[in-house]
Image (cartoon, rainbow, N blue to C red; front, top):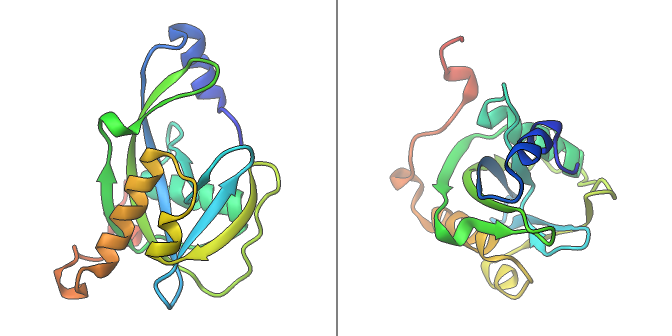
Length: 171
């Protein structure tokens, strides 16, 4: 999916000026600890994810983006980390600048086929840390992928508590 109507409205008002963007990234992991990466059409490799739309929780945005880009209907089970800062500012070819703050969710793969949408995503692969390092990624994605593999290398008992949206109090 391209730019949402919400972002188009903001861009119409502020032009190319820096826009702070809350976003999500799905770290879909298989039983071997490999990470699912997607090749976005005309761009580098990355994890399934994107912007949080108005009215969505980060977990809802993560699930939506995962469905849109891969056809997988999976639920996040932990927050791996939140990244942002100077390395997360992206300048697009049209001159727009966006500073992303990304919540990274761990998602356990259930073995179903990954089906790239063919519009936004044209390929996928499962990678180890070494394989990921060799792929073309922007600095923002590279830091997010490093964060995922650092989390995986942390003993489970030292990781933060499990995240289950169902455990949250009702709104």
